[in-house]
Image 1 (cartoon, rainbow, N blue to C red):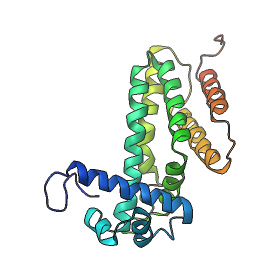
Image 2 (cartoon, rainbow, N blue to C red):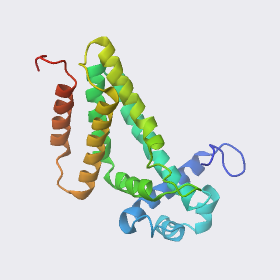
Image 3 (spheres, rainbow, N blue to C red):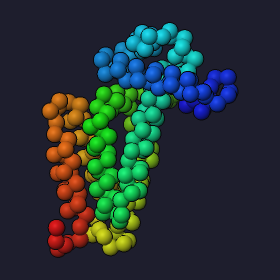
Length: 211
């Protein structure tokens, strides 16, 4: 992964950052059109209206570009989801804000999500192992959700359940919605969001607690 500096070792300028974002955006479009396997640097450069050498200046090859594509999406998601969860009062509202903001981000970034899923399933490290599609890759995403579950249980807001399993179930619902949003043009994300919030609101309540 490249540092926050340019190849010259100096902090990146606004123009350099803008160019990197342009290249990543073009990579997203090319992957959406032809898939990860055919998304060569030459194709991406042509789509961006630049030379392949410009991409090579900003990224150390296709793997680096694809890595930064994934990182940028995670960062963009965190910029939306983090403040939404932080603004919620109490673990239950934090949980609902987490679900709502994740699904809203997916709905607003379908092409990017589709490209990310393709990259995650195909990008390998130097040993041939998936770079992102692994338990370690999921850990950073799921730990904050586990923390919400455990905080809610300790505060008495949630009932008794396995916090890790509940967090994984929530993530599976969110990731499943991403796949459906990509496959189904008319997928009702608003309806799914309301359904999922109610489902996990009920699932985390104490036995006998009224709705």
